[in-house]
Image (cartoon, rainbow, N blue to C red; front, top):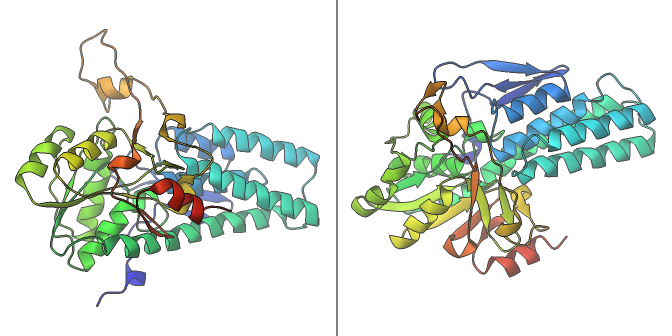
Length: 353
C-alpha cells in the first residue's frame, strides 16, 4: 500500500534561499525549467501579475514572502518600517483580485507583524521570514489532507477530467485537484486523465500535461470544446477542479471555462468536485455574484505567445475566471473534509470562528 506522505514532486514551484525567494518560471514551461529570483515585495508582486507563478495557494505563499521581504534586515519595527509594510501589503493585494488565498496570507502575515511589534521583538525580519516559511509548509500538509479526502470519492479504474492547472505548480505541495488525481492514480482509482487545454493561457496544455508526464500518469489532452463529446462517448468517472475563491453559499470561482464544464458534467450525470484548501473559503462573501472577476489583457486572447491569431483591429474579452453555482457542485473537498449540499449551513458550522 503506497503512503500518501511519500508522494512528492521532482521540481519545487518555489523555495527560499537566504533573503530571496525563487519561483519556477511557469511562462517558460514546458520547454524550459528556470527560476526567477525575487528579493523585494515589488519583484514578488510583478511575478504574480505577470503569471510567472499562478494558482491561488501558491500566490498566497508568494505574498507571504513578499510581505516579509519588505522588512529585510530590520531587527525591530519602528514607524517607518510599519509604513513600508503597509505599502507592501497594498501592492501585493493589488496583484491579483480574485484569489482569496492572497488576502488570507497577507492577513496572517500582518497579524504576525502586529504581535512581533507589540512584544518588542528584536528579530522582527527573521521572525517574519520564519512565518512565511510556516505558511508554505502548512500548504504542503493541507495538500496531502485534501488528496486523502478526495481520492476516496473516486471509483477504481475510472477516467477523470480536469481544467487549468491545480497541481504542484499551483501550490507549495502536490496540488489541489491534481493532488487528488495523483493520489487516486497511486491507489488505482485513476487510469486516464483528460486535461482541458484551458484557453487562453493554456495552463492545461503547458502545465498540467507536464506534471502528469512527470508523475507517469496516462493522459490525453483535449481542447476546451471537446469536453462534451468526451463525456458523451467515454466513461468519465468524475470532473475535478480547483477554486480561487469559494463563497459562503458554496459558489466557486475558478479558471474561465469551469462553469461550462460543470454544466456539461450535470447534463451527463458526472460528479463534479471542487478541491480547495480551507483558506480559499471566504465566509465574508455571501455568494458568487459578489466575487470580483479579474479582467486580463485582451491581447492574451488575440495572441498566443506573440503570434497574432485574429485580424488587425479585432477586439476581445478576457474574464480570467467564472463562477460555478453551488447547485452544480457534487462535493467541496477541503483539508477539513468533504462538504455536501446544502453548503451554506455546512460551511457556517465548519467556519463559524
